[in-house]
Amino acid sequence: MNPTPSAEAKNKAVPSDELPSTSSLQKSKEFTVLDKKGEAHTFQSLYDGEFTRVLIIFIRHFFCGSCQEFISALSQAITPSDLESLPSPPSIIIIGCGDPGLIDFYATETKCPYPIYADPERKLYKEFGMVSNYGMGARPEYFRRSMARVIGESMIQTLKHFGTGLMMKGGESSQNGGEFIFEAVDGSEEKSLSWCHRMTNTRDHLGMDELKQVLDPEG
Image 1 (cartoon, rainbow, N blue to C red):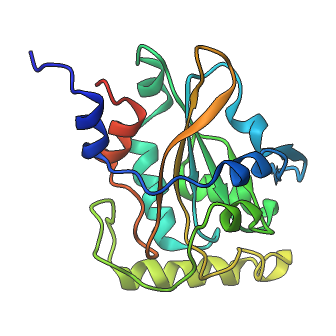
Image 2: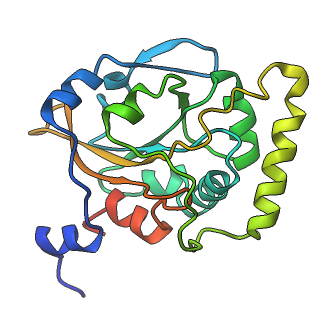
């Protein structure tokens, strides 16, 4: 049996970006995100509660084919039953930067079983220092289709929403996202941010093995 990795080894396995400042984290607690019905929830309410570890994934705009590839891969590689089987089951929450009216569409396209919210004003993205650019970076392992197909299908999805009034409301196309882990403090339901990764380009989400590591560092 392999020995349990030390905290230092676990941190090196999936390095963390610099965490947002204490003031930014405090400020973000009262920011609101919208659910699929357009109802507002404080950001803090998403991660406080029964789970000891909560992974919040910030995606790009709701028509982004690259992020759809990522969420589709995540939905297959890490299922709710996988999380429930862990000794201290974590939870996963998705936040996009477009109109909440596109949440149901996004969940259907990606077969995402996890809660999805919208931050159309990008307050959290900006407060947490997530960057905006159109860089592609290296092809990630979660990509299963060609880039030409991803771009083409993204354009088709956008055009299909012409009649809904949501075609131009997918979100800021240059905005990148990231992954943030909130963990329980001293066994309480209150959480603090312990780890984060900000995308440096449009295809820079974590790989599936890295996600499993941050969700279950003892595994």
